[in-house]
Length: 392
Ligand code: PLP
Image (cartoon, rainbow, N blue to C red; front, top):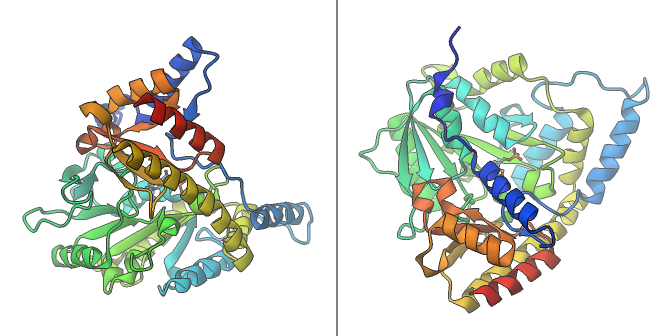
């Protein structure tokens, strides 16, 4: 037999495994140190009360023959798809329930969606960016073209008419840079995709962090995006579902390529390879989208916003260049004293017992930058900022 040799082209260690290894080694050598992580993008606020109540009540349902739920619809229960449709409506986007697919999170869908596309397609990926886009395409052996996200273009690369791409990844608000595309910029991407017959894979996992009303939370706020884009979203960061697992993908009916409906292909793919998200989790996700649930989640988001402000205020006071943190949980800073990303990582860990994420781990244009997240507790974030100030 033959294995998929493309796996041998992947970088040996996934970014966060390397971070975890270095942190483990440091802790072993310094068991007394209180290490604070502002690194990996996991949340610290627990599920909101509405979600917990829904989980408990759904678990009770599962324990009674009259209310027991077995296999559910692969696309997600209508009660959740309706709630997601209404959520989109709350910021002026109209999507059809038949276009919404509930999943166990954005990461799986972002990887699985590639089943719909030929391996001969060329993929356009921003650099730096969430490494899953690159790795999933590398696993399939697709040709990848990178677009430079730099300080000069505000970490928001725009289409280059000379570049021929079939699949385009956009992540806004961006992980790791925190940059957010404006409507005009997304309009340009939609025009480019339409002209080329390309498909935009739009990752909106951090849309709920957008505070400025003028910034788009969904690519479907752009006219005609429904003929050229698929959107991925998640309850992970909005509602602390990183360990509970629920997300959704919107594949518009109008999205056709080579005479086929990508929405119908995705339905076929999901009903063949996926058996849906558990009933209690979907109940909890629907509870998040009630007025009460959304208000509770906003309180958690406020905690992260306060953390982000504390981090950016500290960097400002230290005269360190940074961006993000306003409409995003990520703060993207320049490493002090011209250090490389990994040198700064090692320095911060060894002298301050603070963990962040080296920018170069997200792509070569991330070299010299560093990602901090606002997902820590308020107490730890304050402590980490005190230490940072004393170090530099
Ligand atoms: N998309 C981006 C940009 C992310 O940063 C993450 C997680 O960190 C995900 C998707 C994955 O989200 P989920 O937990 O829904 O799989």
